[in-house]
Length: 585
Image (cartoon, rainbow, N blue to C red):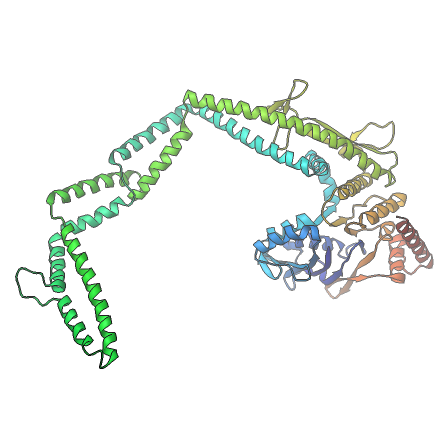
């Protein structure tokens, strides 16, 4: 539930705070007062598209802040996502969210005081918030949206089936495209494969090893300077061990041994000399190790001119490869690995084509089977969905209206197809092989027409609301926002819309922007967006109206006469009717 919304610098709103709560909250006000900015701010807060043109010139930045209290069943999922983004939920279970937009179009998002990608706001919004406006009614006219509505209604098991189908369809199309490409480009693939094989043969003959070029460079350098290296190592070795050619050399190890024994002899007099003697023992050990390694190094030095020639020839062979295939030997080895993989992709042998064709046919059969299961599930859900929406329409002053949901095969249209139960082919896509169409029968005897042809603006508003009420019965986000979905409606129908919204608000937080007093009368909380004009700048504020003020606002909405005694009396009667209706339910 959204507990509070603060808007600054957005459109006509300079600074306004909306105290929100559970139940039904209505937002009213004169045309141009800024009600649309309230809806816009909600969209921004939950990751919607930002329009820099709505930012006020002064201060050149718009900010929307919201305090959200998460219901228990959503908290774990939402908390996991925001923790991944580096934010956290407050100890009292509330989540602070913020969206800032500058006049230059830069947008920033914050959750729990931490900067996060705007996508995090959108992901939270998908779980907790749904916005329905007149644009949503237009969207409902699109076949893809009607199919999505039916799939959403069908429930989680249906959505799992839909996910399985989409994965199968993707695999089938990938194999189909691969097979078609191999057949269509067999000659080009064969030529490319021949070039790769030539390169692999050349590399295979040389058989380069990772890091070999660097090892050979170091070996060549040693062989080219072997005499100087030998002399230096020999002199160091003799200096350490004294093992020369008969010369009387005072070696380091002997001197260290003498120094250690001399100090040890005085340990009983001063223990400091004993500690130094121990350290000399460590030095002697280290010097002995160096001496041993020098001996091994001298034994390993190879002055064979033949070996140096071998190194030169091997380096030349490796350079021939690096000139063609990569900058170094490691790159040549990597090129060979990629070439072997690519050869597999270029394979156009009869055996592989036959294997791919077999896999294509197998996957196509699975796609057709699951598509049929998906169609049957949609047929079953369509009947329930149509019945539930029809019941809601009866309560929205459309007692004779009927909704029909037609589930039919997609036209083949030259694209991928699957066979249907009657032996014909149906077009198929990632969402199945069905076209879904919502049809409205406004009264008995009238033909059922597609929504875009058979529904007026007011009827479409009520169909949209009926669908949302049905969705609310099968789950959905806890906060619902309706932006003038009652447009084109009046009289008894408006009262019925108010009743339905009030009923929806028993289990959801419902925010409604409306021009209809019949709807506003059912509110648990009534907010008025008031416009003040001072100088050249127009600003809006938001206030809660209660008791007499609320009746005056309804009188203004009824007849544009907030101070009329007759208008106020009519408004009070409307409030009494709404209270009685709510208490009966």
